[in-house]
Image (tube, rainbow, N blue to C red; front, side):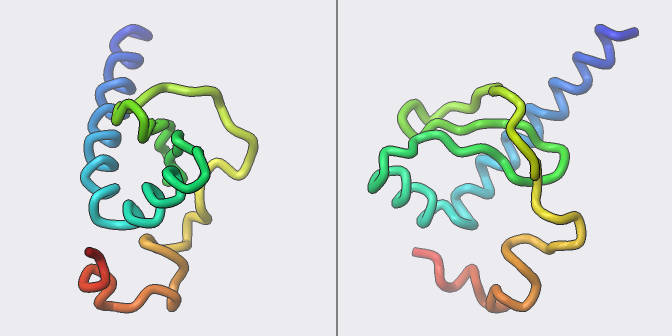
Length: 96
């Protein structure tokens, strides 16, 4: 039973990682990739509740990583992308 649960957990994490990869191209990818290039900070981690993945801009691959210090995610009542009232309704139109 534990093995099945672990397998289901890994499948759910893989699905979340695929979704996150799609989202990287929509929200924040311009800022994050520019930051990675400018600073050498080539690894990012998800800040979404229930997600525990890392992305490498150098290899363009997802990785498992260590548990990070709290907070592990944005506040549950905070919408994405960004804090409520701070993201324009037409935010997708501002992406290149």
